[in-house]
Length: 459
Image (cartoon, helix red, strand yellow):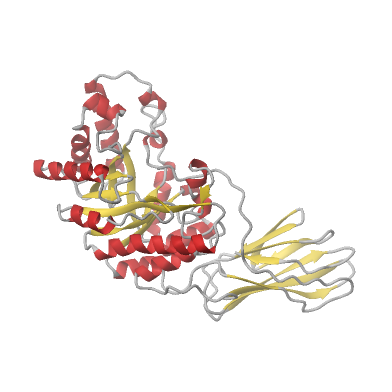
């Protein structure tokens, strides 16, 4: 499935906001504290999963692996899946011309953060380059093209990837083979050939067949089961099946664990590879509570089966989710909201993995704005970020000034101002705020007319 989204207007945060207004004269020590939790507290999900012998992964967009997005991706997950960076249209947009930039970036990030990488995907009916889909090929030519593509890509990352989704979405809903370039040109044995070629290129990588709507026991998952059983009997290298799990709120299949177990009983691993649980917008507390229960049900099913390798969420934040662009009126499908605040689903996942199930208390982390000194045309300000009951690995604060207020210099933070909007992010050396600790940054600014204290958002 496609993961990245180019732009989207962030919805208004539901954080509590306290507003204070100071007008006229020199004011010292005026404070505004806004309660919010920017990162989850306690043990990271990746450590909880590792203690259970499981992998917890996320699909990522390479260009976003900086700042808060990169911090969370690195801290919370022990596996990364390139959302689009390893698909054929990305790596070979023109025949014989390769673009590995984003894929290499993700692999390097994973290596720096001691993470596995799950390759996605080698053979699919979608997101192929136009030169391939619009070409006229004999079966021999098509086979040669496919073998060359698989061999080239898998060899490039030999020894660096833990697993590959080799064949993606080969079945129709009724269990028949999907009519695709590959099936129509090569017959159903293209699957066995692709697995064999991938194994030849990297014998250490685990090889999977991946599909959607195969989470429960049904016609489609039974067709996949029969295929895997047949491939195993033939000696074709097949190590696992991927259950994508693009689910709808309240519709986790009752037979999920049974289905995972029956594949495991064939002697293959099972991975939940693309989990998200979409809801009709707008979200509310009842929907978020149901979503948390659904996430827990999926993780519980995986934890219960020893050969369930782990669970990958298809993007961890709603700002990087494919759902709103594809399913009109639906969204809020991931464990973090668009401002990187953990949702109830996050804590349900943590609970399933043996961690804390209760969100940090309101006000766990606060930002306090103060005017330290003021004169006719300027003032010195300070923001103190403190945590009690939570911790931050990075932070960002923002506010909107009234007319005539403008920052001219800042220290211990990187501050930008566009019009009246100010954003300040941690410097490289002071992003961590431990539970019970605090950091401060300061700035000089000019003012005219009055110097009201703005509403500050931490997140």
